[in-house]
Length: 496
Image (tube, rainbow, N blue to C red; front, side):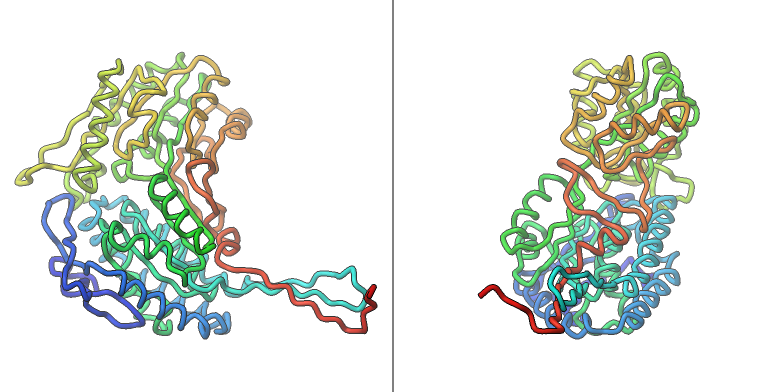
């Protein structure tokens, strides 16, 4: 299915109403391998007309799909899961080519996506209504749970497979139709791949539609389409605010996971080696291009030097290079703008007085001009207001901020507009939990690092990190609505 990614034959088409169609624009967008800087495919440059066609197909298909028995909807999601599993190796390879994902990133993406699809398959049988007693004599209250209608999914480029999956699979399982707009940087694994996989199921035509194109050209129409009932968006806070505002004009429900500035607190009593083990994964997996990665290491002054030394050593030992080598841990950044922005943060931070312990530059790759691979970077003597700490750097960068007591650590952790994830190492679970409770963030992980996602556990952010909740029953609430039907079994007395 996806073996031959060196050509664009399988991907240069939109998927609307069960058909692969060329864009009326006649134009395409090149998909570049971040490791080799070579074009691996082309996808259509979709237009607003095609966005309209996708929503028209979705709205028409949803009526009958929403009335489909739960067992059949469950079976379709299970068929999708089977296809996902069958093509696991090819998808991991595709992630390496399209977004520079190392083998660790690819395997993690498959594991999380499989978890979300498996959880989604249970949703059709969990869409229960309820019976509620009435204050009116002879009245019976019934509350039904129905699909919202059409769910818009706008997915990001960093973990495109599982971040699309966590919205698409449950939306379909709950009886909704979907219009999926993937990122321009990951139009295949975040979008068109889903159409390919659903073609191997019994899903009716029109229930899932995929439109690729530039956000600057079709993004507003996608976010604000009048047929859209829910807009599930993952991306930056700046863009998310715009998407949410446009969606709100049509009273569509926003489910927004936005930016993060996640703190990794290490106290004086922490096991420093365990804290560093967690930090290496939390900062450097997929080059730090994870919304829930560690953005700041907040470390007690009594263990600060030890922590910096050990973290620096581990960073220097990480295998770096092309994503197509199995041993690579730190591969390429997605594109030049992201790379240049994060290296700019490093330069500004050093200019402001921080110490560059290691990294801070790109890695030369044989035969590759203008490498996108950035060295794992550790910065010490950092304060919360320095560029690499106060901004979401989204790279393999570890700014280490010292603190003197727990109150200061919590204050530093909370000194941000974001509230997505975080982690604590405090020597014992009880102390760690006490600190976690005080951290103003949607998710906190004690004796761990911030990158965690389990499909049956609610996932949300606070503040500038978003609105709404993903996963399991929490996301089911976002993509369904309750309808109250009352039955008056005997004549009612009225005061008029």
